[in-house]
Length: 191
Image 1 (tube, rainbow, N blue to C red):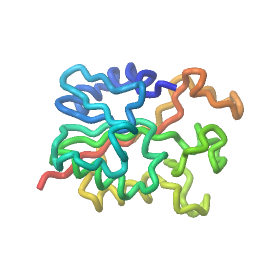
Image 2 (image 1 turned 90 degrees about the horizontal axis):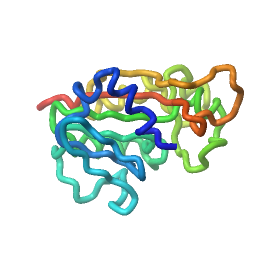
Image 3 (image 1 turned 30 degrees about the vertical axis):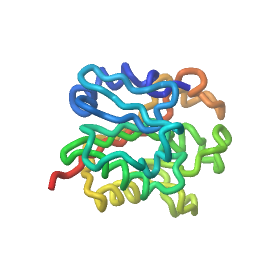
Image 4 (image 1 turned 180 degrees about the horizontal axis):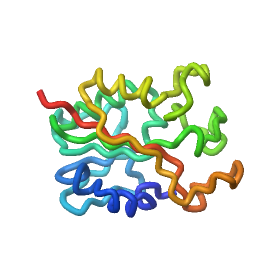
């Protein structure tokens, strides 16, 4: 699927490498498609390194940015994951999270018909009450308040749908090169 590579030109055009993804960072859930930055270094973290939800052994406040693409939906606990992802982030650093969109990717069907390991879903439009599941996160109603309680402020929110055909039907368009994801960027509040 190579979601990080597929999104690189979008991130470059938007200026995200200059604004958020520079210095020393970590790519949580890098797999075989690690983030490459223009200015800095990225430590890839994946299954052989340990539990991405806990990040055992990673010191507090050690990275300028924490990047994770298509990993948070696989975590057992969004709360614990984000707490630890922010724990390893320096004050003033950026948490850059990309997740599948519940409408575009999941087609509002749960469990996921395209990835049976998805434990969480995310949407800008569909509320938790509408789907009647505690493992669904409406970005404004659920995710941003959680991040704020953990000491992060919202910086950039976007739907990334490059190459997505809204008239294509139920097929998994990510297999054809389309993006069907949400990008949430927050900043760890200093002090």
